[in-house]
Length: 246
Image (cartoon, rainbow, N blue to C red):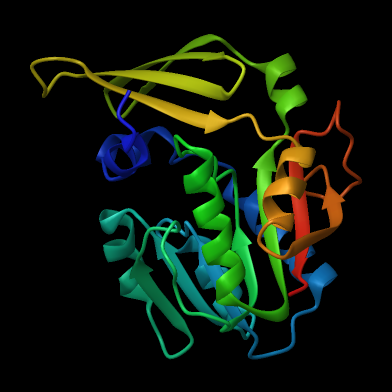
């Protein structure tokens, strides 16, 4: 498997086709609830990490914050740049690399946009860069999958036809990662296109260790997008709120 699968896959039109029917209303409601809980002051400087085409960064900017969205996908950022303004900015950026140091009041990483990297060092580099981008006592929110829930509810095989393109999806996991193999049959292509997503099986304890090394302390967890309490067995999400303590 290519170590940079995410860069190649996220830049394809097929990725956006497969996921175009996500529940954006639920996502918008989640962000509304999260902002109400966090109560950032007007004008707060906000970083949206792995922002995609900027949908959620736009929502945050509309609430009166100074928002910067970054993403590795050049195609997504080109789309997002259409919405740029004095309080909304977008950059193509690899989260493993340093960004603006000690600048942001809040940083967000939504909808399992982490855990793609091959090595612990890369994961640590990403969290270090995020921590460095925050001011002292700045807040980082990561929204991740919940391992036990995914294991129990995984659909191992499914097929979807979207815009005359056939997607055959196979899911499995091992000790370290969840995998999703996507075979794409497009009548306009001579051969099937094949991509494999890979996401690390990080637990809350794994994140506590990862965050502490970079001066981030988890102060609150939620288990659903309605901000209900986190339950290690039954919650569908692992939403962590951490504060930069040094």
